[in-house]
Image (cartoon, rainbow, N blue to C red; front, side, top):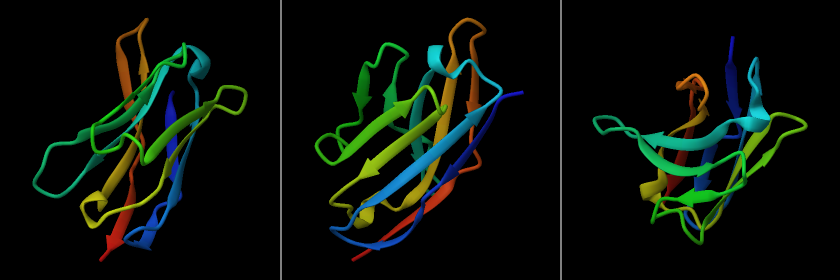
Length: 117
């Protein structure tokens, strides 16, 4: 069974940085697409960034130039480095894994990021 566990959220002032991490188990991590999404109360979950097994990265417009997604296939971990954080980045951030061969998606439990002004 696939499990994703995030860590690294917290409270930071505007302009600061945070690094989120996610560790995966029970999956063929190295051939999966992985990513980060975020959600605020009352809104739909939205894409932050994804990274394919072939290392193609895709970023939401708000994340370009500020956030960097990276993966370590040997450790089955996924990171999101977030710089120059803004109050609008406040949300619960979710780790995501997609297995193309089975068309299954998996989510972590989420980690809260709060950016104060």
